[in-house]
Length: 271
Length: 241
Image 1 (cartoon, rainbow over the protein chains, first blue to last red):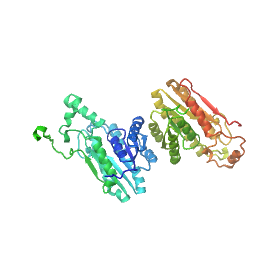
Image 2: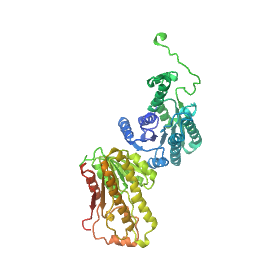
Image 3: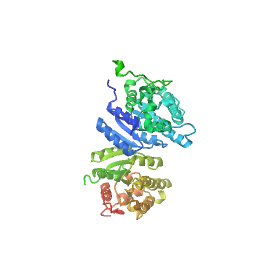
Image 4: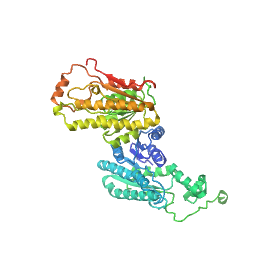
């Protein structure tokens, strides 16, 4: 199936690692020219060189701190022509409401909540003027499946989910689609850190983190590529009738109300 | 020459035209990775593309250096840059009786305050890495003061003081600081000065001005000197001046 993405210009934030990196790869694989944004100039350049080497597409990079007020304007001045914006950069601290202090909470929201809102505003304005464009916000299941120990992240994600639905509810009247993806627990460095920390606290050994996820769907984490493929589809004209909605990519985690240990048939039983 | 700056990264301010543009191209020809900044997007993108064609890697970031937030963004984008060409500047010629305070303020904001902000932002990383080279593009107006350009000369005197100050404070971190002071160069910087006295003075000029490439050549020399040698000050004068 031709995704119809060839030649599109896609801006991806938080693109040097994790889901953002995988989204960049997926879009480059579909022939998009990339505009990659992340904090660290060196890792970003290395990622850009690899991606453009592998897929033969133009990859431009901009190292910038998205949590700074005004950063969205700098980005928009640089990449005013983006056809696709993927808001992905985030690093909201884990912890319950008592353990995330005001500074840490606000700092987390500057990057993910206000960072997404400011970039959406800047690029939506330009896409509206052109009558064409797609904005995909990578949010997170914390928006729907509340977790006591993810207070700042879950609350921020809920706000971004609402923003996505509100803007996307009418954006297609101006030719622009605004969509979201809620990834579940994805195998990234960030998830690795929090699971290792939990394993150290609960099981006394950080290396035992896989035991914490054995009751989760498939008994493992989601792969970044599994999220990236959905983002690429939503960004493509194949999803032309979709706007103001959010797709959950969590292998069933959010819908699963009670723990379920899958009994997987062994080879012997099958035989 | 071709690859003498291979693997080195450079940030050039005021690179959409004039000395900045010529310097960016010369550095790219020497193999450098060049990040160019300026206010004019189309011109800037063209310079970046030419840098890439010339054998370096050209990247552009459009913005206004008098916006402190943008200076921060620029520092982030530049990453662990090896060389800064602190070149951006503006110039409005006028006799004192017609010179406006607004023009004076604008020149000080661009030529002095923004230049300090950029140099400081980039120097912070260089101090951490204990290496780097800051090049301040001043002017012969940093030494002598000519009629019709009094405020401009005042800004360049101030910028020259910054060059000396950065050198004094940063040499112990292994950071080089060079002041390049060209005399009159024919660039678009004067295009906004339309006072009749100015036009008359330019028409009466009896010497050929420098070219942007002359200045770029001096800058390439400065940034390719050996580790143990820091050209403090390079003054360039039109031959017949």
